[in-house]
Picture 1 (cartoon, rainbow, N blue to C red):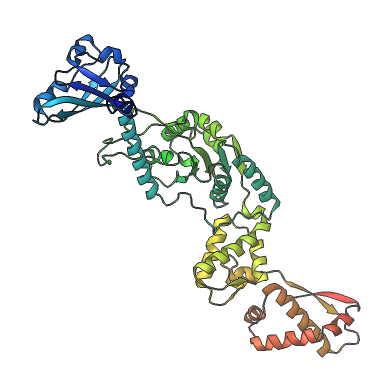
Picture 2 (cartoon, helix red, strand yellow):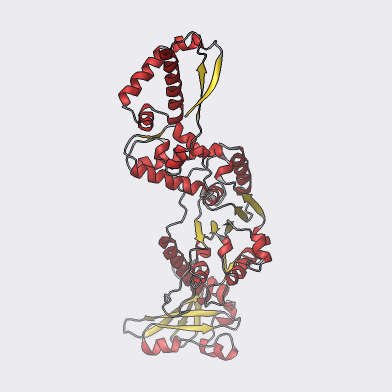
Length: 475
């Protein structure tokens, strides 16, 4: 029964199989053998394989060597159809140890080489991937705040762009949050589960940026890894490549990046074989690229390749509605990180809104981090803010108070009304009794007592509100 089904059994093998007898005559081949070699069973069955070399079907045989030595033999064979085959021959011996059959397994060496190359590439990608600290990390300390109308409009545009695969160019001053917008686009795209790779084009030395971006082949230069290395473009394959400060990219690298955008191919340093990549490029800069093009510092063809979907992020001074929620968000993050319980007084938040923030969101974040590290009390007041100097506090606008008419009031009553007006304005400006006591250089308990008296007499003050009043300026 086994003899009857021997051919069917051999046809189930995924590898090509050829069996010859001790004289070299082919007695069995399976279906895969014909598929791999292009030689039909009629051309080889019953034929002596040594004779087939002279017909040009293939260039070498290993049967005779196995019969003579009784050992396994492996060798590469070239076929007439141009394929390269790996022969792996095994002897079958009788009870006396004589070789009676030779079983040869044939494998497509091209496929084996491709698999080996793919494994090597995956290893290189994994090594590079593990060495990065900026991959696919959404930083929770920098939320994308959308209180201002300009940011709400920007986020709507970013969401629409994220659903496509177009190249994005982010413009804006240093510190406005281009990194956060880029990550948001990646997170809302179909590539969200693939890597997000950030490349700071301005921080990588010019002599290293080529190998960092595009990788290198084995033995490309002295000191290079013998296995080669994948570049960041390859690591981002399937995901998003964020090129921060693209305006700092050297001109030679700009031409190589252009090839990635045009042909979706990357050529490693020292290699002659391009590799296909599927990346979505998001670039960012604080420079005027059109001006850079006019000055010959940026390639015009690359600029127009990048200028597909352009988002301009407004500076923080032009979106004041975002300042307070950003400051509160940063305070919550760093308070949790440093295990503190801190809050901003309303006066401190108001003071931050009035600041111009030349360093944008980054300046605000760094200030809040410094406050959490240094402030020893629970409420952060305007006097604690580094951006509000003592000189600015001294030059703060005067208190505009209303002085009641002098008619019918004693000096004591007039002075009491003035004092209460100052206390009310002080609370409005400094946010707390503690801060007001510190500014007025008074004991906190005295301020507290006067405020309580003012609140108790609020009904009386309201009755006086109908009297004619005269404006007076008090410093």
